Picture 1 (tube, rainbow, N blue to C red):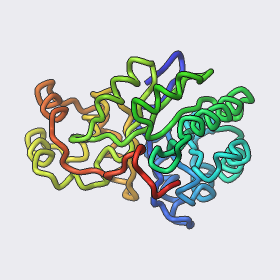
Picture 2: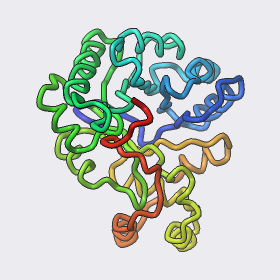
Picture 3: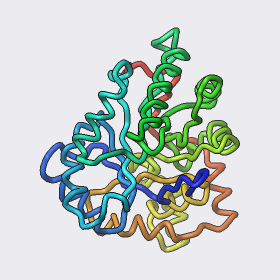
Length: 275
């Protein structure tokens, strides 16, 4: 997918909950060797050093990879230092994308608009300095984006949100598309919960595919980049192949209109556990 000549792979490999240990080196290497070129990580995951070692262990050149890092809430006052720390731990010279991991929550901060504005200004400076090729946000809803865009000098390239069947976040999705902001999906399989839900299992049976294939195709056909994660190399490969699979327009529409059938339950307006 692209935005004004800014290109991203159609699918990414996520690293949340991968251990801060040698095991992660092999997992990331296997993902890259399987064909993944987008590696998504974050300071909050606590495993950046081992992810960096996994990237180095692969045979793929740095310029062929798309590496994403994320700014954690506790680093809102030292954005450049946090970014440089991530670059150092990943052992790369720059990041392809650096995201604000969570907006300031309205439930915690009366001045949430100002906080988000100030953090974004620091991200813009990182972009100006060439430390990052692109900047973006995570978990921003429509109102949060509207407020940010009132003062932003550089529009976010990406908004990474929870997105899966039964939870499309239509209002935010439509706003991003209208404003030329690419959308990535975290938890495109509903943290695995959706794979046991009857609507997904029935559709998988119809196509002789897995429920995971259905969820990945759902994201791709909604023009959303899924960030998937698995430790199993066979599933890494099957998830990649799902990018080529197409749902019928009728089935896609049915999935688009599913009621809520599971998700994280996290709301960036009301969340209090991260601030």
